[in-house]
Length: 230
Image 1 (cartoon, rainbow, N blue to C red):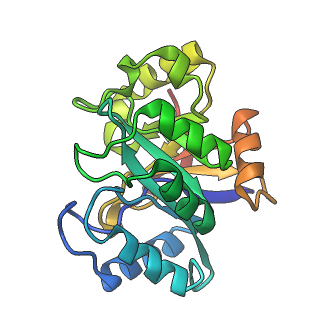
Image 2: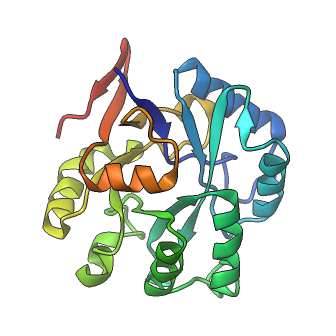
């Protein structure tokens, strides 16, 4: 399949409060390359200890592992108890931290969805509604006028049985879909990925391609990847 294979939802540890490990992260990157992925988004939870330690490590290494390009991002739980993936450049992520005033930390400092979308959109970052129907994190119940400001909704590898419901919600909101593995360990990487047009090298181009419906969601199967069927 021609195009750029992108994993948009990946964490750096198995459990949120577990210390992050350089070797653990390298194992995740190694798995991504074994699967033939071109880009891997690191979207750790913004409110866990060590978030900026991971950022600094990746920044020191130029956001690359061998020939795999790593994307700067995070998963932010907003005040409404839903999760949003936010992706951009490393500089964008630092600017987002400044815009939010108090970086998300537990229940005390969770930004309202409207504030997060305003800041991220002003920075040109990609915003994705993660696992919209996950119990306790049901983005789908939030006001539609806010949800329409997202760039996309996510088909999550952990909840493929909810794909039809997510697709129906996306049609109602007139939003495109992207895929994400929600990987916490190396073997979970690349379960659901995105195939973006060749030549899509920056976030502005990606956002435009996704909005035009040019992204294809692929699901890993025993003999390779196949297009998601909903």
